[in-house]
Length: 240
Ligand SMILES: C[S@@+](CC[C@H](N)C(=O)[O-])C[C@H]1O[C@@H](n2cnc3c(N)ncnc32)[C@H](O)[C@@H]1O
Image (cartoon, rainbow, N blue to C red; front, side, top):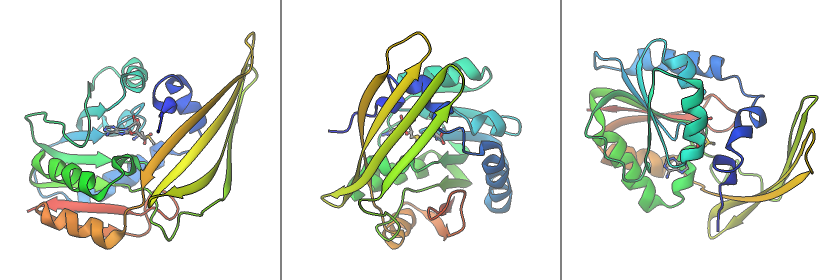
């Protein structure tokens, strides 16, 4: 069973663990993509699975933003950082905000957590329901089977003078779903070293099937291969 400790008890370390990511550069790319594809005239933006809202820190300068996420602990980190954005705890598969947006983003592979095509279809249908006509959805997916390197060891390190974090995992597949047991070792000044094992399971969704699901949901959809991160790409859908 997946635990997702990273978004719960380890949420306070999230921004440190991903400090190698350039959220400012990614947000600039997203804004260009939005400007190129959006047909509606408003500025209402919903970030689904917003995590610590790192993209929203930049997107909020040009959009009226809302963020939703499944985990309250990570939303608390986001709320402590950003004041003029509304945050709400909600599941991307079945949220109902009774509002439509000009832009919906779902980034950094969060969509993979829905795990099955059945859930993917419900989620994308739900995104379409929350979009205005001419509104744009941008989804940064998890890897496809082609790019998911089986049994490959991975390591992420963060360190400053008071805190050292090492995260190691190998990549497995179970019933067509990617499974990663992330081992965290956290050494903090004045505390004992802590060890956590955190399982993450993400669906390996294929491009043609995802595009078909987007089209079925009433979106004019395309896949852009050169996305924000290596080998992930981006889906762009405009509500017709
Ligand atoms: C890799 S993080 C990405 C966070 C953020 N978008 C970023 O770019 O840093 C994945 C996020 O998806 C959220 N999540 C996982 N399953 C979800 C679901 N069913 N509905 C909403 N959020 C979900 C997690 O809580 C976590 O914050």
